[in-house]
Length: 104
Image 1 (spheres, one colour):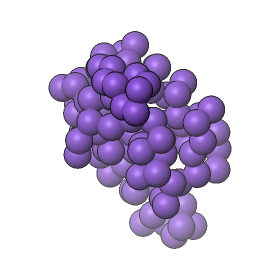
Image 2: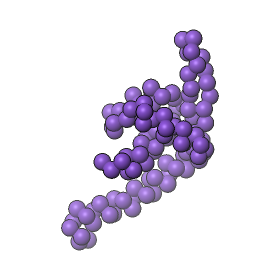
Image 3: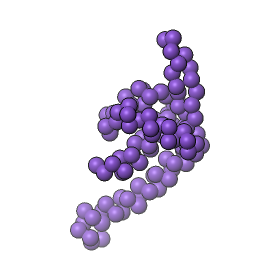
């Protein structure tokens, strides 16, 4: 899969996990892994980017004597999911065009 396309899909996957409930890095990976390959080295830059764009916020909470960073989706993050859903509808039309050999 194209790297840029996968990066965009992963962002929306992360936001979708957070739409359900706040979460932390390892749990986010566990939730996404059955659907698309993701590693810590991929996830954390995505989370940082989502935080810098205002799509997620964070809070720290102690867990087993260590601080764990939790991520929460914001209204901007929900908007990004909605934008993706609209974009995918257009993508489906293009996909059908390609599959049908350029015919309607």
